[in-house]
Amino acid sequence: MNILIIEDETAAAVNLRSLLGEVCPECRVLAVLDTVADSVAWLSANPTPDLIFMDIHLADGQAFHIFKHVEITAPIIFTTAYDQYALAAFRVNSIDYLLKPIKADDLRRALDKLRRLTGGELTSYSASVSAFSRRQLPATFLLHVRDKIVVLPVGDIAFCYTQNERVTAYTHAGDAYPIDKSLDSMIQQLPAERFFRANRQFIIAREAIRDIAIWLGNRLSVTLSLPTPEKILISKARAPEFKRWLAGQIEE
Image 1 (spheres, rainbow, N blue to C red):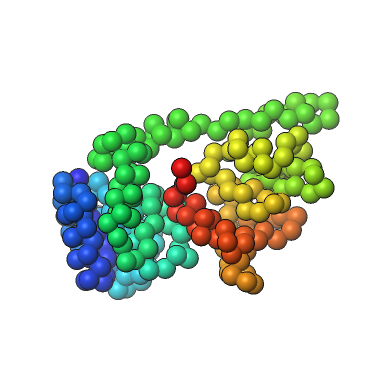
Image 2: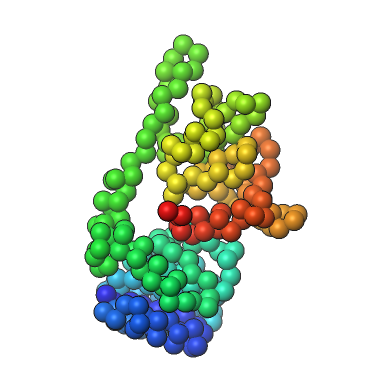
C-alpha cells in the first residue's frame, strides 16, 4: 500500500514511519511533505496514493486549505494534537482522526477500520466505499399524519426532539413530523454512523451539524443548520463519546 505523509513535525513523521513499519510492513511511504503548497504540488503531479496521513497544522497553514486547490479521492487519516477539528475532518474524506502522540494500537485500529471498509483490500477504497454506501441505504419511516401516510427517509431527518413524551422528527428542509416512537426506540433504528443521541431531548444527524462550541462546565453546545426548539447541550461525561462519533470511531 502506497502512503503519503503530510506532517510538518519531524519527530512526529519519524514516529509515524516507525509505527507503520511495525504495524503495516507492506506499506510504502511515497513522500513526507510539510506544507500546504508542497502537498498541493505533489498531489497535482503524482498518482493518487492508497492512503494519506495528514497533520492539520502545517508550516504554512491548515491542511484543510489543500482541498481548496486539489481534489483528493484517497482516504485520509488525520493526525493532530488537537481534538476540536473532528467535525471539519469529517467533511472531507477522512476515515479516522488520531490524536498525537500516536500509539501502535491507535494506528492498527485505524488501518483495521480501512480494511473493513475495503473488504480486506487496503488499495480498493473508492470501489469498496461505494459498495459500503449501497449496503447502508437509508430506511424509511411510515408516518400517519392526519389522514395521510407519509414516507420519511432516514436521510431526510436532521434531528428528533421530544417534549411532553411526544417525539417530533425535523427534516433538513424544516418540515416537522410526529413520530409514534420514543427517542430510545428511534436511536435503535437509526444508523449509528449518522445519528447521535445528544441528550434526553435530542437525536441529531451528523449532516445537520453546523458548529460546536465549549459551553459552561465543559459541556458542548451543538448548533444545527436549522433552528431547534432549545439549545442542544452534550454533557461533559458524554463529550468524549461524541468526539469519537464525529471522528467515525463507532463503538461496537
